[in-house]
Length: 247
Image (cartoon, rainbow, N blue to C red):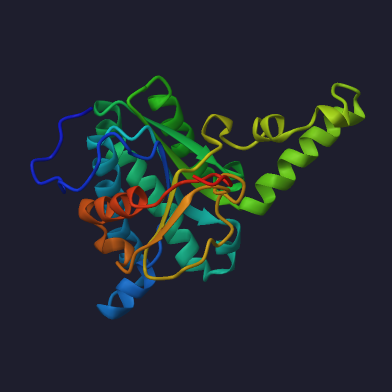
């Protein structure tokens, strides 16, 4: 266990922490509108929420957190907003890479991210290479990501293997299917958090959330602090996870 913060909520059971947390970071645009700021400023403020989340997970030695940064549906947003998001990716990677390395944090990416603008791809490749040997914690970033497409993609790969007689249809089970997800080593979510008060999944990690606990927080993402992470974990710990059984 890392050094625990002195103000850690005492209700948190350190023996019952989620191993993999997914976060739908919602509310950047609404936060900006409420303050008379631009959408770009809202997304920039949201980067602070990411730092708070990662810091909180690192303090609790949570192995993995997966972030919904840019969905396949986000291409429908105004072009200037989309371009600003990609610019923010570049800015964040270059600004935070040394901090990620210092904290032994590995970056992984899920989604069709190589279809992003060349500069964004270049910076993402830089982040992957610079952190690939880190072992303290993993941050998985969903970029050009869609949960339905991830499942279709796995099905296509397995169909091709069947067509080439590399496997038989009867060989396909949940374990084999999950090996062809974007990040197969983290194919199960324990806790899914969505901010801004919205209660939707929005095509995020549909396979991985099968038995995840879902927690919806009213806070807008730029206002997210470690205390909100603790709040979600406390809610998670109050539930009885049955995994389809009687408990």
